[in-house]
Every structure is written in structure tokens, then in C-alpha cells.
Amino acid sequence: MIGAGQAAIQCIETLRKKGFGGRIDLVGEEIHLPYQRPPLSKKYLAGELAADRLTLRHPNYFDEQRITRHLGCRAVSIDRSASKVTLDDGQTLEYDALVLATGSLPRKLGLPGSDLAGVHSLKDIADADRVRSEIHPGRRAVIIGGGYIGLETAATLRHLGMEVTVLEMADRVMNRVVAEPVSRYFEAEHAGHGTQLLLRCSVTALHGDASGRVCAVETAAGRIEAPLVIVGIGVIANDTLARSAGLACENGIIVDEYCRTSDPVIYAIGDCSNHPSLRYGRRVRLESVDNAFEQGTTAALNILGQTQPHDRVPWFWSDQYHHKLLIIGLSQGHDRVVLRGNPKDHAFSCCYLKNDGELLAIDTVNQAKDQMAARKLIAARAKLDADRAADISIPLKDCVL
Image (tube, rainbow, N blue to C red; front, side, top):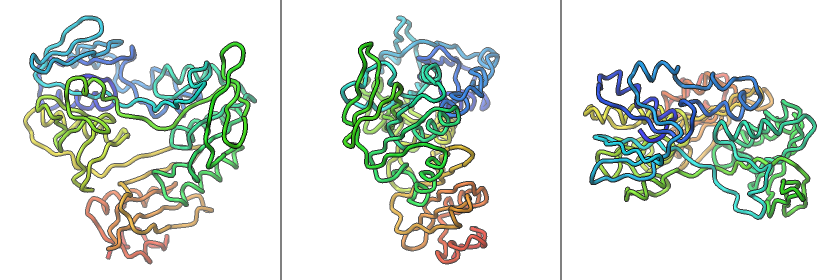
């Protein structure tokens, strides 16, 4: 098992629960036991959650389940002809089945000054610890990127008394993943909490002081003074190991519906894998805990010969201040967005419909009933009456044609 995150843990747990009694080696670049990452931009960054509470399984679990751990180690090569993996400490591990759960890497800014001290991404515990060490009430932070990570971090820093400016190149935040009413709602919420949002704002350079520390961000509209910069402009699949081994890769490691790579004894799961969505009829690479969990299960079952395709409706979430955003399904290909409820009431949904009324996806804000109903409706390819769906007084399940 190369990679020690949610996908790897779920794969290991499923293997053991389903009776696999053979050796399992877990290789992870970080020294930490496998841990959950979503809290890094929220409660952990805020100091409200200790590091030991992030762990996905108690330390005893790995001994009880006879998992050989290689933490703080990096896999440097795969010899497919010999079925061996070489680690950076010189160890060689043989395999009958190999699972790549290598995750993703923060997209680099690629501008002058990006390597200055005080410029951070937020991907792992070490990143979060570095940012935490620089949090001081009244100090200004500039966050480059108005996606999930950028906005979650902005909310946390404002909660801690920082002055925050968010820079977003697009004309609205989270523009690639949510409908416009959702973007505008969160823009208003962040502004109401004192965050400065600059849209259609392109960054041209970062400037440093005499000590080599960032002191300002240069944009097309002018210069913003700040001693702390957090870059959240998306991630890329961590597929370097797979590419070097000659596995098929394109926007991630190419797998089939059984999570198998172009080598039938090598599997790829989680953020690093590009899989065919049977539900949506196209290839996707998903960055979510849910996908990691489901693919970990699927890979384990197929390793054990229990043929099972990966075919689940994906979902994603984001917590910002006291608001819960949940996204069910994938909205690409929709023809119409139907708003359910009034954003002024702080609870509403946006339904993405195809021209025949099929519900492809839904964004819900503080609206648990809609998201729970939508999971079943999307999986069933249900078609909705758009006029009824726009009436929040009618339960979503009762809007089916």
C-alpha cells in the first residue's frame, strides 16, 4: 500500500474484514499515522483539535491487524517485472498486489517570490503547523484562491482575529464547483465576517523584505501588504511514481471501473486515480474523502476476487463559519439550475437539471433534508418537475415526474 491516507486505510480495513490473512505493508512519506485531512483548514488550524485526534485508527489497530508500517519513507521505484517496490531507505518490498494511494499535491503558484518564507500551502499537518505558528490577531494574511481550502482557511483566520484578504481570478468564489447563488451567498457571508474579497484579481508577483520573507502581494490592481500568504489554487494528482513505472496516466493514474491500472495487479485509489464514472458516462478524478473511502473498499474486494465495480454518486462538503455546504453528484452537462428556498433564510439548495428534468447534482447550504433526498434521486436518475422543485415547501422527493 503506497500512501497512508483515507483510501489506504479503507482498503486495508476491508481486506482484513473480508478475510485476507496475508502480509500488508503500508508505506507513507509522513512520519504520522494515517490521519484525516479535512480538519487541517478548520479545527486543527484553529487549535481546537489536537493532532492525536486526527488519526484515522488507534495505534494499536496496526499491530492488531498485523500491518507492517514504513512511515517517513518514500517509494522511489516500481519494478513491475519483478513485482517489487524500492523505498528511499533502500528497502525492497515484494508484492502480489500493489495499491497506489498517493493522493494529490498542491498546485504551485509559479510566480516570482513564490518560494519566499511566509508563503504556504495547506496540504498536511506540517503545513498547518507552519501556518499556525504565524497566526497573530490583527496581522494580515492574503489567501490566493477562492476555492474550498482558501475560503475555509479564511474563515478560520478571521475566527482567530486575523485580517484576511482573499484573491480570486474568476468572477465568483468556488466558481468551478457550485452554482452562482451559492457563490454569492458565501461571498456575502465572508464579507459580513470582515474578509476582503477581491474577484477578477490576478496575482503577478510576491515581494520579499531584506530578510527574505514575503511582505506584499502584487496584483494587476495594485499591491497588498502582508507578511503571510497562503496559496490554495487547487491540486494535481501525485502520479510521478506511476508514470515512472510506465503505467497509463492522464490527469491522474488511469484505472478501470475495478480500480485496476494498466497493470492488472496494480490498483490506484483516491485523489490520484482517474476512473470511469458509470453514472455520468465519462472519466473523472475526484478529490474527496467519500471517493477515497469507496474506492478503497472497491479495490480491496477486487484484490480478493470479489468482482465489484466502483459506481457511487460522489459527494463533497465544506464547512465555513457555521454553514454546511454539501454537494451531491457532478453538475457538468446540466441545462438548468433551479433554486430551492431563499438564501436570505440561510438554508437553500440549487438543483442541476438536464433538459429532460433528470437531477444530475445538487448544492445544499444548511439544508440536510434536500441533500439526503437527492442522494437517492440522483442514483435513481430521477426526473423532477422544475416548478415543483422550486417550491421549498414541497419535499424534494415529491417533485419527481
